[in-house]
Length: 114
Length: 114
Image 1 (tube, chains in turn yellow, purple):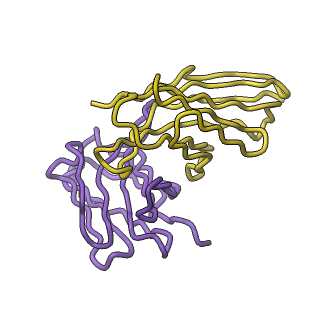
Image 2 (image 1 turned 60 degrees about the vertical axis):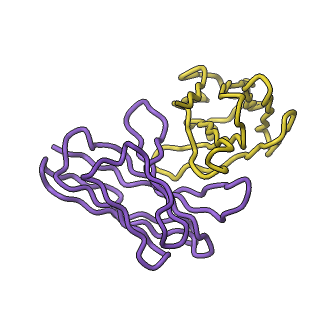
Image 3 (image 1 turned 180 degrees about the vertical axis):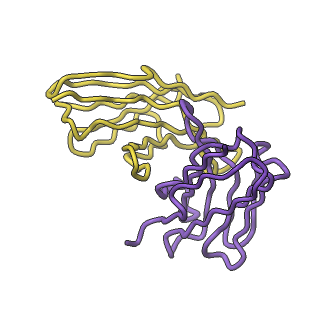
C-alpha cells in the first residue's frame, strides 16, 4: 500500500503572506511526483511534474522542490492572493506502474483572506 | 473547449438504480483514467485504458462497476445497483503514454445516492 501524506490539511493565510505545504511519499520505486491545484467546481489543474532528485520547478509565484531520497516535496506560494485559494494535491507514481496510476494525498486546502 | 469533458456534472439517484457517466478525453490522448474522490480524501484510482484496452483495474472497482472505451475515444463508467457508499465525485483524466504521464482532468461527475 502506497501512502502519500500531505500537511497541513488546511491553511488560512492573509493576502500577501508566503506559505508552503509538504507532501511525503514512499522513497522506493519512485517514478514521478505531481502537484495539482483544484478549485471548487473546476477541473484539477496540473502545476508540476517532477522526476529527478533535487528538481525545482517554478510557475509564477508558485514553486516546488523534490527530494526522492527522503521522500518529500515542498510547494511554495510567494505573496498569496485570494485567487490562490484552492485544494493543492500531490500525487505519486511508482516504477511498478510506469507512471500510469496516480496515488494522491488528501490535499491541503488553502484559503487566502483579502 | 479542447479539454476533458464529463457528463453529467451532477447525478442524484436512488439506491438500487443503475447510473452511467461519460468522459470525452482530449482527442490526441490515447490513455484515459477514472478516479473517485470521497469527502475529505484525495482521488483514488479506479481503472485506466490505453486506446480501447483496459490495462489496469483497482480492487476498488467492484463487480457492480464496469468501464468501457469501445472505440478508443470516449469512455463510460457504469455503476449497477447503486449503494449510498457510491456517493462521490467521479473524475476522468487523459494523457499521452509518455514517461512523465501528466494527466489532464475533467471537472468530474458528482454522484449522490439517496
